[in-house]
Length: 345
Image 1 (tube, rainbow, N blue to C red):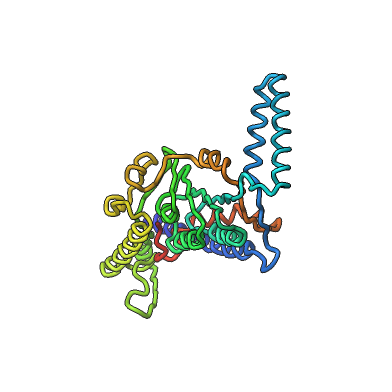
Image 2: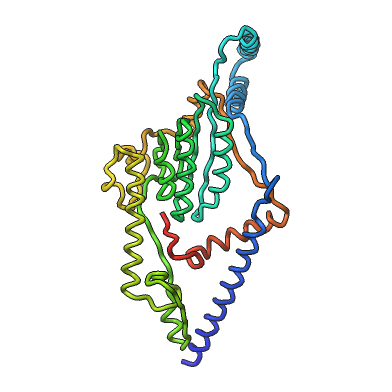
């Protein structure tokens, strides 16, 4: 018994030290990774259309015979000459409108929203009537406030009058689908994971371990429900009921948000927390078409000048070295260190 007691104390001390060190590192890394007030990043705009044209040209050059290749180059010269003369004659351009493509790879804490908001602001500054936006979403969801803000950023595109398409190649579940449902059109790959309209919150409790080792824990609050469930205190049935009630409230908000944006779905049938693959998601009207982002872009290339738009923050050497460590610690401890009211969708 003495051995178990000593081991328990050692384990508790070791755990406390590890959590304390990790928390300090997370704070240090988060402070170090904050962008500078000015000159802290750059906007990268690259032509996707040129990339498609280059791939097509390389493919033809690899497959055509010498005679066919010679004719191909002649046709290309004629085409360019015609385009040049068309511009001089003030003839309307073949592809007058732009398609801006943004990629959102979201993690549980939704920190990528800071980049997304800059990218969308840039698009709204340069887009004109007739332009469109494609956002490629890849996320299994995360904190409600983070993904709620991400969905609001996408709404800005629609409020500006620009058609918005969301593509789901791998996964847009929970918070990811909260973003996707905002779009005018949602496309998904056949086996992409879609849905999971539900809310989850979980927290470990060490109260029994503390009691076993005669360790007291005190927490003082003002307000009946300032804290419902805790890490170290003794949780009550009243606290659990309030916690569950708040969880249900968030779920109702989530359901209403999806129903407002996807008016042709049976919200009660799809808001069970389940997820579906793309083919079934289309049957449930969670998505509009079964299509990969690659096929969408290939088709759009005939009508639009396509550009990928990405905001890149500048990082120092120390930030680059510490980024992986910071992300690893944060992901590993996020369920423990974040406030229990950070519901996850």
